[in-house]
Image (cartoon, rainbow, N blue to C red; front, side, top):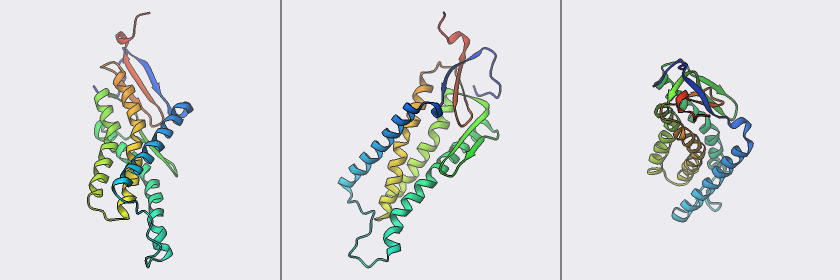
Length: 200
């Protein structure tokens, strides 16, 4: 049940707010770095690492640095593309104008005037992850070196970012069946029917 109005019988059950949980954010970031490095290392055992153009070949200085610099550019753009897909998912489900905060190095999307069912909120959470993973995975099938590694590093970083999605999905999954989810792009609130709370 998606609704613009919270039913009177619902009470706040849980809040997910990464801004004030430094320990959790640190663990998620360390997990992302670890998974990214592991994925790149594993692929390098199968596919020779060729992010940098060979020094003995006839390339200009610009050409030598163009490929690794493009990784940084794409990583910068990645966060914005991911949140734009979140924004699209919010619009598709709620049919309402979402909240979108854009910063230099990051962005965030939400919908502060709507409450989502568990299943639809899980769809919104996973929509960017699945979409980007499939698109980048498809590109990897056709790209030659060294651009293969440019895209694979983005894909590895993207897969590792799923640590945060997994935490959110786990929290939502553990909520009562009829819970409603509110997201204003900075924090997530989980509301549940009053009769789902344990009796005191």
